[in-house]
Length: 168
Length: 269
Image: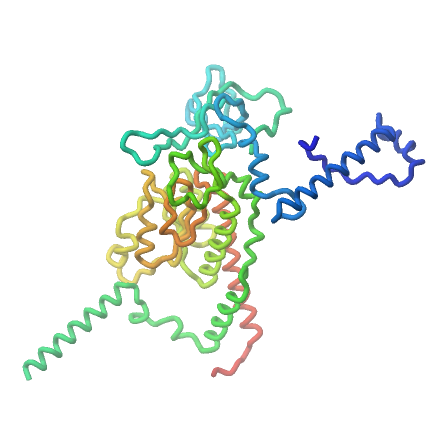
């Protein structure tokens, strides 16, 4: 699976005889796993170097704009309607929360009934409706934009494991 | 005899009118001592050398190390408006349209940003007056702080009609106009092009402008296609311009010091 990147130093087997001694340090890894891991890492490196050679301008790392865009959460998300994302409150005006979720615009949601704990900096869960509220009115040549996104506030973010969701 | 006196009188009148016209156009050479005329030829040599040296290399201030594609991407510079808001003249700068949202081509943005920053640095190096303009109320404070931090000027309030075109009458004769205007957002609050872009073009003042996918880039001298709505992107631009201007000014001080130390008592030609 080339979906994830594993950045570990290259495992060079110095001598086969010491692998059993070093195998005691790493629980559950015998020579079979180590060999398989080496093989996979080598295949991955070869694939990366081949792809980097073909992508052209930037040597070494695959950070051309096209690849960055393709792998970005915004593009991977697909159609925006009813997608669940995590946002962060960056401004509060009485009962309105201005929430930034990594898109071009922020969204403004009214504070929910029991949401006194939601202040500046708190992370919330959102269901996105639209990334930018625009509409073409009669007689206009371009759309009128509200410079805001629209989302439904589901509640505060529970738990500490989901830190980096959709921060682009 | 009388005719000769009349013509002399008329000539005198025309001459004085020409003088006042020259005055109001900002021709400060005639009405107070020019700085160059006071300096000794030695300092003139140094200034000339310092300026010529800055033109030797294409990236004299090494501005390409200030930003990278990844940084621009993380600051969401590539996000444009929806397809319906697109300006026809921005189409060459767009990478494409994804589910009705325009994506700005960051490869082009990198080149344009490099040229814009290089030009800004050269203007600051020569002691030019730089004016930051943005009518976005959300970023007004940020722009004003940026201008304060690099010792230049900002205008983030209502733009009076004759600010550039009628300056000697509105602000007094002999006022110095900016040498560069940087627009951090080229639209005003009713989504029309900012008046300053047209006025700067009329007064021959070069402009640098961040143009989003709903802006008109045609009159801007150094357009930088990019997002102008997200706080992250605006902070990035402000930081880059501030660092560029500070770097250019520091370099100028450094070069003058270098030259004045290396040529202690040169005989004047």
